[in-house]
Image (cartoon, rainbow, N blue to C red; front, side, top):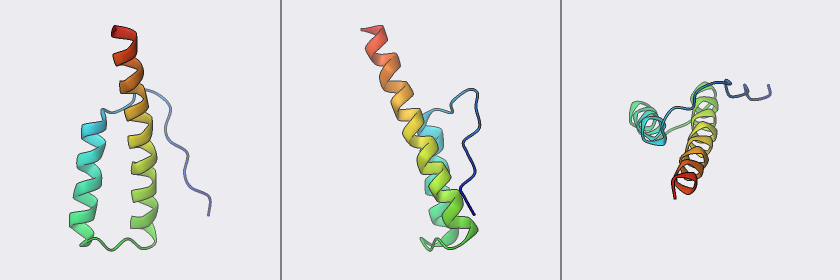
Length: 62
């Protein structure tokens, strides 16, 4: 099954997404299989977008 595309719209801050990743890893004991692996991959992709967006904001502010 192909991964679900990230939703369009406002990007959550990277620290919020990072907290979600940490919570997922704690909840699963670090074992990522099936749905939890898919959720992790989506969160990492979302975090990457959030970090890139935050970098653009910093550069524009300078």
